[in-house]
Structure formats: structure tokens, C-alpha cells
Length: 135
Image (cartoon, rainbow, N blue to C red):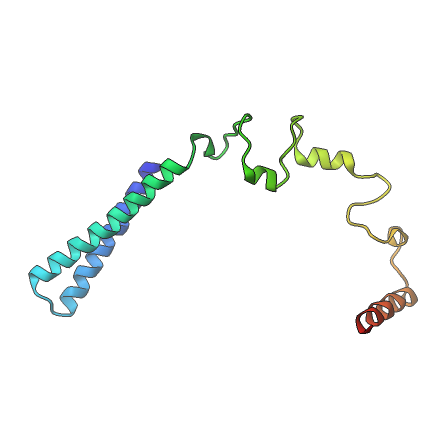
């Protein structure tokens, strides 16, 4: 992964240096100024990318690679998304165990499970909603 990032960083710096040199030629700078600006912009972008890659490697741990999971190490992201189970079951398995079979997930009004509400009931619900907002 780091090798790919380094090659992308080099290409980006090279394109930036060529672009700056081309703009220098377009604006009529002297040859010395074009060379200095092209090399300077290449070095600036390359060193900035190199520092960012170095920080990336220092901050990220080896177990952060995709597809690898370290069972002994819990991250805060895993806890935030609900993967805080210690018995080895996945969150979806745990969720299936806790859902009541009589009550579908997300269903609030148990009267509307078997059928849709008729027009009179829908009008009553709408009327309650409007009155609740105007009070």
C-alpha cells in the first residue's frame, strides 16, 4: 500500500512541477526562473506527500488492513457501530435474538400490521397531527 501511495505522490509532484514550468514558459519567465520554480514546486509537493505518507504509516497499526480483524483489540469505531459483543456473535445475530416475533421491527401501531388503515382512520390520524402542531 505504501509503495502505491509513494508512486502516486511522485506522479502528482511531477505533474505539478511540469505544470508550473509550463505556466512559467507561458508567462515569459527566464529559463533560470522556470527551472527553479519547477524544481521548487516538485520538491514542495513531493516532500509534503512524503510527510503525509510517513504520518499515515506511524498512526495506522498493522491490524488496520482491510479484511484483517484483531480479536484482542477493540476500536472505538467498532463500539460506535454496535460491534461490542464479547460472545462471538455478530450484531445482526444478536439483533435477531432480541426481536419479539409478534412485533415487526419498527412497527409502532400494532393495529396496522394486518391491514392498511381505511380513509376514516387516516383522516383521524392527520387531524390529530394537525391539531398537535397548532397547540
